[in-house]
Image (tube, rainbow, N blue to C red; front, side):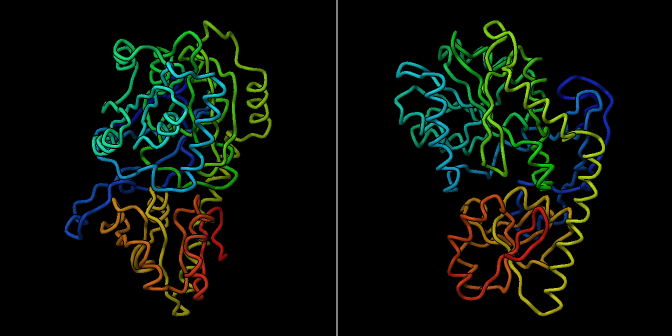
Length: 411
């Protein structure tokens, strides 16, 4: 169920340094059904390393993907922000790869098919590949053809034989989830037609470091990519990056478009320039990453000071959101129901459950107004604007929001 790597995921090197130990924590998406389950809850080390050879930032503790992804609670379709993002995403890809009606677009880790639906709007053929049985079933029921499999280069060959080659193979927030990103991208390459592109969106290391987004570390997120490390894994997989877009989603992400090396010999000049800028800024340098770790400790102290001070003043507290990132934050900061008695969430899959490790009951979003705590910590801070808009009535009645990242502050 759990093993530890000894080599770097990108270059295979063994010179790895631990710089951010986040403790032994419960799996971020393993919500509990009742207090009876608290006792037997499993916890695993959440330690972040960097490779001194190629600067790739990564976890070495690998949890069996069957445990993490077969029954998944994250559904892309519940957020307005993501829905909007998907419309622009499909348009950008269709334009760039010049997709026609007969062309196939494959999305790996296609979740509930929210993005592929936007491609269907353009009249192209689509195919989803999704390992979570519950979510793949939902997508198929919604009319988005989805194969319920874990993806790798072997599966890619089978899919190509069955469905034909693809004009675009897309992976959103999934490249970071796989233990062997090189084989994974080889699978993308195998599926492409003679003009096809591999397209991946990943959270950006520069944003992660600059904005102190340590709560986006959890056991599903095995790799933390810079443009430099993306170039490295693409190179190993026989791909070259032809374009990089910066997108605002999930606290700052990069979307890369890559072509087979047989067609494009070198990474695009602007991609190489982005990598050089990263190296010049020292984003993944040992000194910068060690400083990041010190800043993370200071963030924890600041948040706990604020919450304890409010509690001493007899102020009531609650939280909004039950995202995976919130669970890393709660576990690392040691926050339980003593400080935050509850959280609320819009996802019906999570309401009625308890957060892993910290055991906060997850109530429906309507409970925020029913309970009207004096202060509400927004755990899903990447959707803070959307949440504050939707919960304007809570603020009108005197409720105040707390944003925990990058430093705890009352807004």
